[in-house]
Length: 180
Image (cartoon, rainbow, N blue to C red; front, side, top):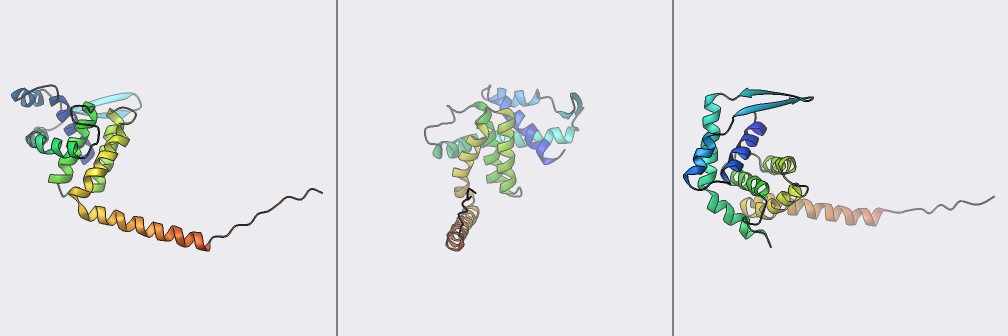
């Protein structure tokens, strides 16, 4: 199972727990179908994951569930006019999963987490889910990763300087067509 498939399973597992309380959440995880989907031009084949991969995914989702109050607090702190209770369940699940990865799985590159979060939101969410998730994560990321924030600021300043330099050096010509 590659990282993308792993993230997709985690998303689905985590999503399935949103409709249950307390111990029922853990029970719901045990009912998840760990089938790997392969879409090949209208043919879908299912292949069940090995037991060790199932156990790993279940354990990872349980870790995320343990951190929900902390993750939700981060989301609520940086979303103006939105709370986790108002968000679509799909967007909320994507945000929780990606924030968990950003904060607690430092071995995963931050840019990969952001890109995958947006892709999952686009795939499973509504028309604006990708941009909504991207916007929320963009607000939270500088608090989690100051070096990325500084890097983005430096890039912004470089492109701003480059733009000013290009403006100074640019010239244009007006060509008029003469009528014979």
